[in-house]
Length: 312
Image 1: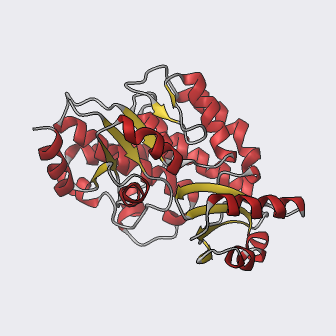
Image 2: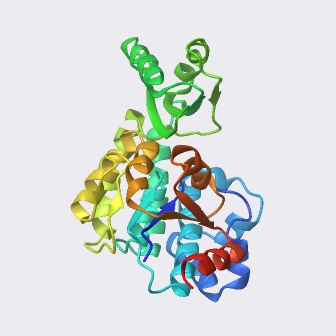
């Protein structure tokens, strides 16, 4: 049997209309929409299928992404019940979906957990002019050196997401980030682009959210892992509640090492399947480890295609 990594993207993969094909064609999807909405008092049909301001707000973005990912995963498992994952991996928020898919947290509890995570992140960033910037075309060491030098000058700037070679996202104070735009370009970056975000993920600005998030995780995470989950912080597998709580608390204030994680698991698995809206991770994987075949399930048609390839 093939060794398969089940993978899940993070914030930024959302789009109006995501999950609609699942909702219209699956009773299970409609039930999951209803149960998740009842738990946090959100009409997910309205949030996902109609133009609105909420989908871009972290407290709503996170549960919306997780819900669609878990619908995709559960529909896949219903079609391929005997197929077992070798491991689970997520990018940032996606690590919570990975934990959920591994069986360590119920999806409805996970929706509430990431709803609170998003709210805690927003609260931690209030009044701090927080933001993130994508650095394209510059090596990791150069970005890290510029951030370290800026910190020595009292600026709030940290490496946040290691996505692929030549693409590293930094987080911190928007004014501090903007002040370094030319510095990054002078060092060789092709682009230094401020992102449309009101939070600064995976950096010290989120420190006030760490302990409150830990309390919620203690409540919901279980000692039940179908297969290991890869930590964004360490790139290593874990399979206990204690490790999950510790590492996901650290993940708030430490960078996501997605590139390094894919490099670590690529020799260990035969393929990866990305669940949820879009093909963000499929695109990254192609550039990180070109020999790692990555499929994706984002609607009923792609579900059928993956089922035919890996389950029959």
